Length: 93
Length: 163
Image (cartoon, rainbow over all chains, first blue to last red):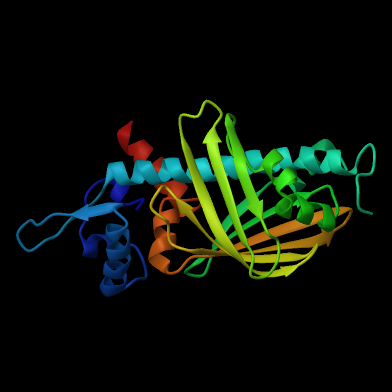
């Protein structure tokens, strides 16, 4: 995906820098395509792939939100735990 | 322990494992029993499991037993947006471990996510490890294709391409 970020590329161009076979790269691309993160177009016998900006941005946004959401929640949990154990021992042990 | 060490120790991690797993870890300065209670008692859950500022959880049901269900409903404090999660609890070891299946309703349900949460004693506190298992590699790819490691690189590379 870092390679596609620099522009369109074909399977062989994508496989080239990696120790991956073209079928392995194709399989990986298929997963990304089904996830709406990349697309392909037909140009003669070639099928160059490109990043689907809208899909990537939605995913980035969602992931950043998930991570921030968890981090924020756990910061709040720190406070809840402190209140549970101090200053007065709550019910329970 | 200095403040900077404390900060580092409590930093959340989020990593992938194999084809279908996501692992989240976080340390807490409280006993495993307390962290477990905060994950299972609705009155406690409603105080912290709120994500970004401005959200509240008016409905919080957690039966905290094998075969039980849970349901969390969030809304923006001004009532403008909302969504909920439903799930089934598969296994419980009080104070130590919870295994459940959950899905988000947006409003269409997302694929089931199986989550094992462990609470382990760690020095004076607790190490929490949450291990998510998605149904298949594609679902996880959808969640993480541009995610934490390679994903961030791709984003930065894309950004470089734009400027």
